[in-house]
Image 1: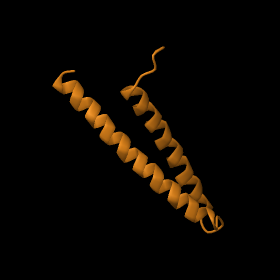
Image 2: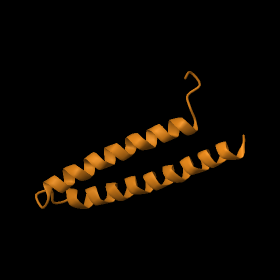
Image 3: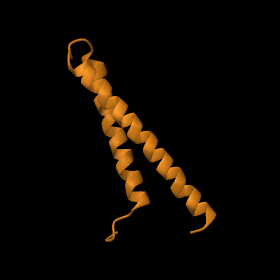
Length: 71
């Protein structure tokens, strides 16, 4: 593996960890808001939508790092 490829993979791992952290933070925020959803239902829906988008990005990066054998 050359230096550029190594840097790309290292960068992907760093991005993946950042996204996982953000996903956990959103999960915590959703749980707090979920205890009384009437307070801000719109915010709750936006946070859930953001969490799903982040999960999709996590999946994409995981596949880039370790592609399926069949692909």
